[in-house]
Image 1 (cartoon, rainbow, N blue to C red):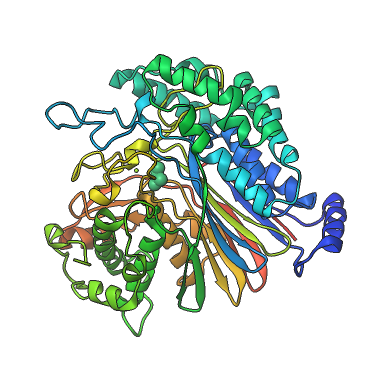
Image 2 (cartoon, rainbow, N blue to C red):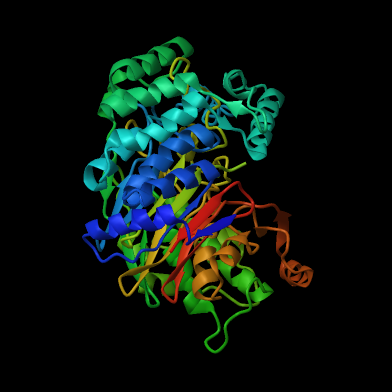
Length: 556
Ligand code: GLY
């Protein structure tokens, strides 16, 4: 859904005030593309009242913890790519493995993976990073008081919000699937009463948010909230303790910044695999596409070439990406032109590479949620946040009212064994205390002539990478507007399952027939929920994928 506001008097007044205070050159346009209407309305309110993109992002993050419990969170983590006052920055507020975690913690005495233990229940949770992340973002870039940014979330938790049909549907699906799989968690106790069109309140979460409002990061990582979490852990066999919480730190990292065509791509560095992956994909595409013609969008040749690139991208991901504070990641080599040229060499326009032959070259219902913001000064935030799978571990911290992540499943629990997204990992991503697990989250910003051209990102486990690079190609290569760029059918291939292309409905049958003749097989399903802002001829455009319950707003 997209709303354009350009006539409302209150906005004009607000913007006059903002313009008078602006340090950077104001452009009087702003836009948000958010995964639900509550976060969209709050983010735009913050911008209209003179807040910057980071202020709006912080307020939205806390609102999503209330209104989008599938993925919004205070019990998870995420990545924030920032372009502020002409500088690029990146905040890693990814969760870390608890101090008591160890490499083989999800294996039985025979060395076999214990089913579902890294995915559901209290042992699947890593130490949450979101609250420290928002606190650090506020300290560095915030312009409005912290309390003002947390207040909307408190009010939505305390007074309640009207439940969207998709939220009720997801809750019912999760409760049923937990029952079918015999997963014993307290999710239903907290969420079964959420019904479409009815106000749903979360009083325990409201109190937790009040402590965060009053004491900042310490309102979560120390004091009452920390005591409630660690007591809950002790009582239910969890391993996150007071020192895990007190010592958690979000980290400012140097984002990956690379030229691709006439654009500066600002994207996520490790522990995300996404930034390296999208650059490999975009650059290799330019190497293998025909010189003289633009390939037709979603044609068989286009899909085949991108699937071939995907094989190589995911082989590298499995082998090389890990937490850069624990393993050395050859980031520069992996996105170096010469390396990518060498990787492109085996790609043929007419044949599929044998899956087993694709080795690393140097010798993730999938949830998570994303939002994109451009403020009236031309600053941008691209933020992806997660508790991993839909509704995370399914465990709510009783007395604190928030859902714990199941991010431990993003580690490689055993070399060669796939996680919930079918992603395979090796030593670089094995479990160690305090280590961050590899992510696919890829919050990305493209600049052209130092101005924001595109802000994009998506949920979807490993398909995040696909949703992001295809949204970029849709805008840049195929000149789509924001609505088209987010809604046009996408497709995904990640080396394994062998030769499988996962795709939206809407891909031409003749195209699929040609690909089948080449040897591909198919799985039709949607993935992702792209939230995208683009600028064309100086005018901002924004869209939320119709798949989800998102809302985007542009103000001129
Ligand atoms: N939990 C999904 C990801 O970080 O990639």
